[in-house]
Length: 107
Image (cartoon, rainbow, N blue to C red):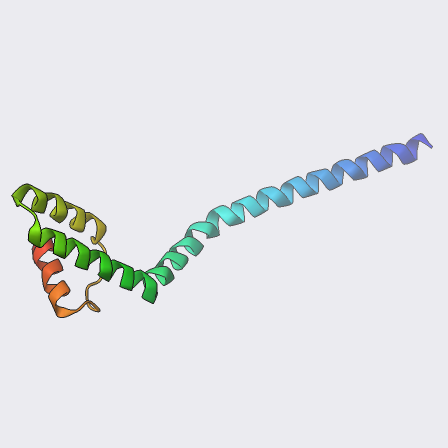
């Protein structure tokens, strides 16, 4: 009778140890693959139409504000545009916005 209880307790402890080990393995797996998954998700998001149209609208708004701003206001807008559009590809922008962005970036 006591032997069966001891075997039962050992089995339960073994199952808990297996579950714990599998959970740690899953965390390690997730720790390895989660950054890669997130990078792919972000890359796909940056290629979506809504992202590009939103960026285009933001740039048009900043261009309008830039044109009517004074010198100190222009400096702030230039800084904001350089920060927000640092890694934005301008190939799909209309010519006017593309020229403006290149002028702001300095090339």
